[in-house]
Length: 151
Image (cartoon, rainbow, N blue to C red; front, side, top):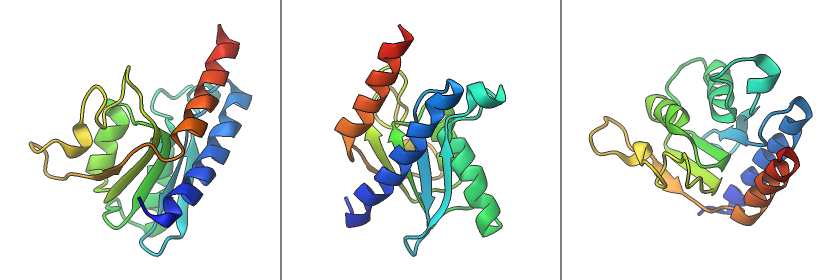
């Protein structure tokens, strides 16, 4: 883990905290460039937009690609509050993200080591460096509190 990982996770948590205002699950993400600058931010927006692909990671990846002017984000780090699902893990690999920093693990649908490990699958043409459990307790608490209000 790098020193800045916790600081960037705090930014992702700030994004996640905004998602419930639209009925979305509180997941947030930031894409960090090689110089440590935040290139893009995203939060879940499926309910807000009616778009099934509007996950925090996808939104952040799209914004980062637009910011740098290319789809290859090979010098970038994606920081996300929850372990990515299969769709997002696939997008992370396809964007050639160098590092993935995640907060809470997702034992039901995680595709970065929990259920599947798409980001490090040796059969694919790119593997992502993974750092897990950064501010895991804060990320998990935010999700648990959200789902407690939904039941």
